[in-house]
Image 1 (tube, rainbow, N blue to C red):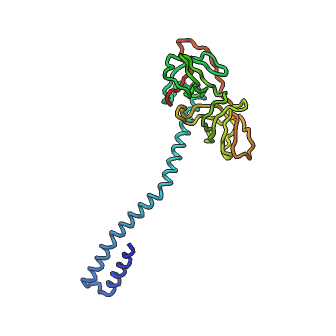
Image 2: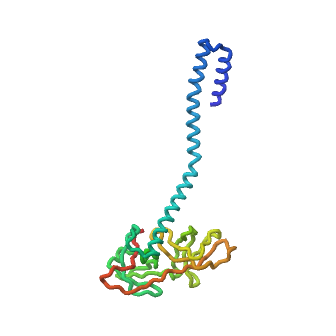
Image 3: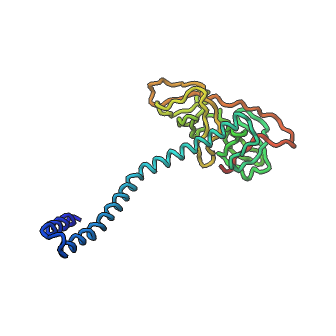
Length: 247
């Protein structure tokens, strides 16, 4: 490619010594046009390719932005359904099994005629509220660990995109491991991030207060869990509690 400017210069020098009406002049100028046109086309093509390659990082960033926006919209839809208690809105595409609560204290015990499909770690939900995680199954009895248990741990996020982890420590439901610059405000809703068994968007609770100093590099906030009534239901009524078997 470095020879191209030299060749063009030679042709221009030769053509400048010729008279415009001479056949040799016309041949050389014609050659210049013929020779220069493919080079110009190639340069234009290379410029377009360089522009496309340079746009790849922006495309990737835009794609991540769209994914985050889509995730937030899905969560807001679940929040709306939960807050308005609208059962006729389209439900998320989860596979669930209805259960009947027998007793609820330090451990929730329940029963179902489909216990063979239930495994430890699966979430117990009421509408879009996360109630607890399956601990074990013995015969037809399901033992569920509520969120107010120190063994529970899973990733969460607020509706303002602050991310962290849910734990139960010092008799408090908490969201921990929050970067200092993303400390969520009071009444922010906390919901689940997806794992192998827990779907995205289950409501965990609301931020009550910050329990760390503003200068701490990682923040903790207290979470108020939703109130759940474990009422005995008539056998003919559909259960308000489900276990999600497939997010």
